[in-house]
Image (cartoon, rainbow, N blue to C red; front, side, top):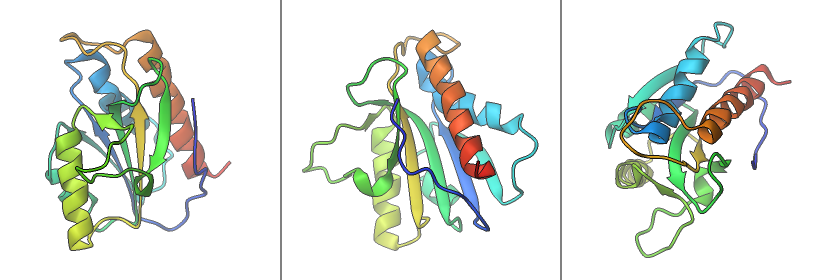
Amino acid sequence: MKKEGNVHITNEKIIILGLGNPLRRDDGIGVAVVEALKEYHALPEDITIIDAGTSNVDLLLLMQGYQRAYIIDAAEFGGDPGEWRCIPIQDISFDMEVQTRYESYHHANLKDAISLGQALGILPKQIFIYAVQPQDLQISIGLSEPTSVAAQEITEDLLHRFRGD
C-alpha cells in the first residue's frame, strides 16, 4: 500500500466518484467504496458521493463545479492484487505518446474525460485517483479477498482525510 498527499479538507466542494462494474468482481472496487462511504452518515455536507459505474465523458460533467475530486478505480499498474495507490492527477500522463504505469479498465473513458476537461479548463483544482490492482475480473459478483481489504483501507483513508485526524 502506498499513500500520497494526506490532506486536511476544509470548506471545499468535494466529489467522490466510484468507477467500475460490480458484475466483474474486482472491477467493482469503486462501487464498493462508494457504498461503504454512503453508510457513514457523519460526512460533511459539501461532499458528494456518486456511483459513476462505467461512465465515460459524463465524468467531466459530474466533476464540474467541484474544487476537489477523488476517483476510485481498478487499474493495472503492475502491483500485487489488492495493492492501491492514491495518485494526484498531475502525476499521470494521458498523452497517447507517453507510456504510463496506470492503466484503468475504463482508461479510454477516463482519459477522454480528463483530457477534455483539461482542454476546457473546467476540472477541479485537485483530482486524486485511487488505483487498485485487481486480482480477478471474471464475470461474477463480489470482490476478491485482497480487493475487499483494499476497499476497506481506501474507505478509511478517505474518512481520515475528511475528518482531518
